[in-house]
Image 1 (cartoon, rainbow over the protein chains, first blue to last red):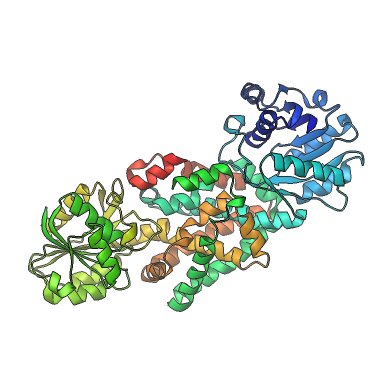
Image 2: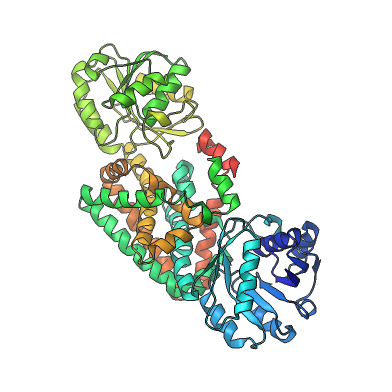
Length: 299
Length: 299
């Protein structure tokens, strides 16, 4: 249980966190901060926060600050917040890339406030608080990235919050986290966008898009996500993403070689390998959030 | 309306065609031929065909032969069928690659039987008649690939059948067809398999698979399809598939270069381009079959 919680950035993620905390009585007061006035008003109307405020006004006396801003501005918001922080404040974030943020936060923050990096593995192809839902984190994996400098009490309180949200806290090193998401989130995203663009560049583009069936739709669904957010994610996790592209390309070259050489034996071997692994996934419900599970069951 | 229809290969596609024809009274008699005795019995039990028979026994007096066999054996089955064909028989197939089949069929068939290549753009990640459903083709695009040698009456009757199935007949040249499916079906499939294998080859494979969220699941869903069928599709459509891989790779290199160069302007441009195109897809309901539409609405 927290007394005063400030959520900086009340979008889909910040709004869903706020809604879950307000409705679940996890805090006495949840204050929302957001540069988009309309979005902030909507957050209050929806009950995602108790009230709206300015960052400098909201921060004094806060015991938990949640940075739920777009990844490109999180460090800037944190820097702005420093003068207004009360000793003992716990700070966490929800960003998709952790390395640089965790290192910089530990370097710039005074030792009497406590940072714990976080990344809930849940999301929807929506932006803004209007898409927020209190059950967004139920059943989802929620990665936290403590370091040797992390305050143990702050870490325990964040883990407790995650469990109250119905999510599953998973501790990973911040570099390990960035490697994981480069492969399972950033690489799939950039491949989906690349596949759509490949088709868009063909002269018979209209015909191709008109014929696109279920497989193409599934494979490219995530290409419809927020472009600015994805630009920032890909550039912030640049090293790891480039490494993932390199590994992917070498697998693609192998596939291409087997097709070129009419190597039916090796080709079916790699297709089978992929099939087996993909089939082993859907059972793994513990890491699927409630919305995704509903979708899955609907099929 | 056909009198006697023979379906060679009563799997998911052949079975669904049979079921729609039996239940929709599109033929007096639908006869199923399949080397898998259990599957064939099941087809009769499910009402996907009126009765089971051997190819040589079934063919005489047939006015429509539907080749719904795996792509690797279709030409062999057609060759076997020739001695038993009655003059006037119309022959069609449902294969995902048309070039070689159409050329060979026109070269080997006597001039008094009439071949029309077909490819319904519908399917499920299932095999065997047990997954068959009479509404599989409702609302789906159904490509047919007539040539200057195609008998006009046979073409009209096949188009009529497709419309009775609730599908939308679309005429394409057979090479044009193979180019289209290389980009919108075969490329997405091989990329999904390659993405799964990329992750499977990482040392922290278990961690990566455990963390895999919705984006990864969507992008790789089709990697769980039948490996032998896909091996045959990729090798049969080899030239076009290799061309599609080359185009994809050059798009991927562009994406990689923008990330390497921290080129935020160009990166957001290509992400936006993909987003716009992907968003323009789901409205295009005319090419989505009923099951896919149900899934879409379930979300």
